[in-house]
Length: 120
Image 1 (spheres, rainbow, N blue to C red):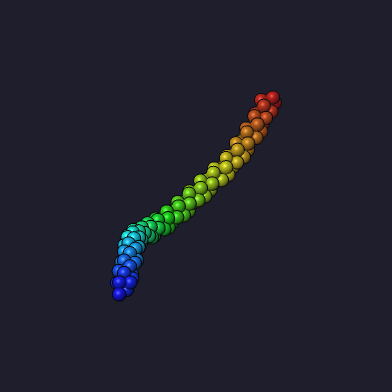
Image 2: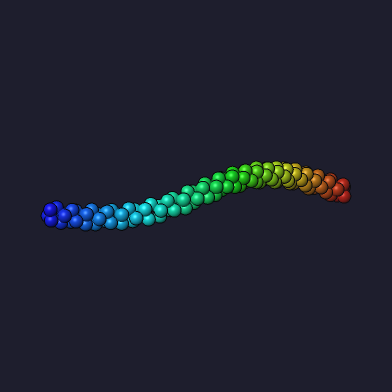
């Protein structure tokens, strides 16, 4: 009977020690789980914020692309207008030079005729 009592006490001590060990492990795991859940909540909030920022930046980027396209069209239109005015000015200059050349030729002819009339 003493052996059984001793064995029972030893058995209870072992069960108590194992229970304490498992309880400590459970507490440690619960703390790890709490930290992981907290981290997950933070990361979910961060992910939501990043998605909102990304969407906002996509919208802004699209708006900027439209603005740039509009400015490019405006610049091209302005460039085309300037080039058309430059071509027109060049054509006027060529025409003006031709008129001046014709006038000089006519003046020379008139001067020659005048000289011829004076010499007679």
